[in-house]
Length: 468
Image (spheres, rainbow, N blue to C red):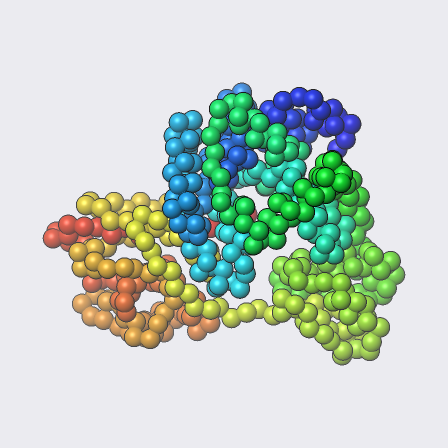
């Protein structure tokens, strides 16, 4: 990156010009791109959507707004949803709303609600981008908060490089703009936006950093946020170089690699500087999808393991097992057995079923319509015969399925269909009570098919979540 050029672009110009220079400098949105914009309803996301809308015609961009309702803030969350729908309708931008029970999902994943909400948002973004990019509204203040929090947690160079302008398919056109500049842009352009009341509650770490710590730093060092962001950019350049060097060393040390196992040559590892060896180990963990929660103490344990005799091993977080054997370290991830799940399917809401990697939506209408395409399929049932809540879940004791003029226990049906035992516990089902309407990808119930007497048709649509 030409830092001089970018600094010139981000000088005394309007916000739109800064955003345009950032988009071009980092090749964020090519001509004709599909752009999914995450819109919460706050000042940042409203300004981002407005600016991108202004460029869309000349750049032939196809813009879609995505709003995720987390089910956490009651009436205020409903207000945000209605607001986003309203501005998108006014600006003639397609808008999609997704609903999640974040509190329930957080409990299931063993994570906090903030982290779970973020993960769910990005899962939706990935699905909806259709080969394009996702624009989110992180700004320079977010950068300062993030770097400061990571510094306090003891992050290394990669962490202190902060939020990057482009990461995979995620782009951040506002990253070099301050929150003050964004709010002034909204005021100048008559843009209304929503205030999230929880942003003022200092029960979350980021809110305390935003509302208490950074303002205090700004009193001591008036340009503290700007300088923190500048430091992050310098570290990002250095990190890019070091990662390139580490990647070459990783492949020199690589003996073999599979889906759940990486084997590294000990002699090659010992020839590296300790700093680069740590990066090589981190690459192996990322290959297994298990970098998170591996800390400095675990890297020290790996250093010790390399010096021990064959047969020694250790266990690391994320169910990673490392064993030394005859000149190699084998890093293996334990594959967890599938767990059961159950999601209520409120009518006219799309629910993401993470365990099955699909979205499911159910609705009732007065005529039968079913359309099958490559990325989704639908099944239609007689709602008059059901008339109660339905679920997407795994099997339960007592489940049965109507086949032809008879009925089978679900267990017997799965055996007859030669469904492998290890797949039966995770097989997704559409059901109510102990009645199976649809064994997804297998069979639908014969007892709930529409007929000439049907007045209300229940349509269940599944859209596959494709990880690209």
